[in-house]
Structures are given as structure tokens and as C-alpha cells.
Length: 99
Image (cartoon, rainbow, N blue to C red; front, side, top):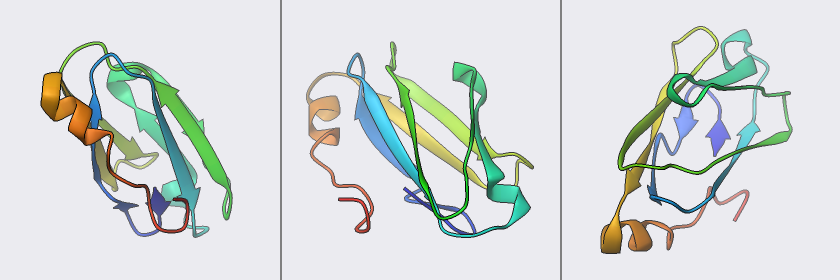
């Protein structure tokens, strides 16, 4: 996921019950993007500039898992889906820079 003036993509579909590994590549030095916070999951990570930082978790129920920057200006979400829709969600590719 590219972090530069926002998150790209800002919505990521995943499958309930399967481990998720998001790779945040911070392509800027703006203070706002220095960390990513998943309030509902209790996850907070520093995002060093021009580096990739993994964030891992397993969604246990369907729904939105929102995240934001340290200043709560930039927002994104992981959408956990169950069943066939969830399995299809894992067919997508990451940002072009990271496969």
C-alpha cells in the first residue's frame, strides 16, 4: 500500500479468518503519515519514510477494520468478507511497486 498524501488503495477486501499482511510503503516525509493506527485492532505502527512496514492481523468477523494516520487526516479500511466473496478478495494484487 502506497502512503503518500493518503493511502492507495484506501479500501482492501480480505477474507475472514485468513491472516492479513499489509505492506505500507511511505513515499514521503510528511508528519501526518509517520504512523498508521488501527483503533479497533489495537495496532499502531511507525512508518519510516521510504521504507516498507508490514502490519499483520487476522480478521475474526466480517466488517470494516478502519485505519488512519497519526493526525487522523488520512483514512482507509480493510473490508473482511466471509465465504466466496472473501475468497475472491484474496485474488487482488498489491500496489504495483510491491506486487
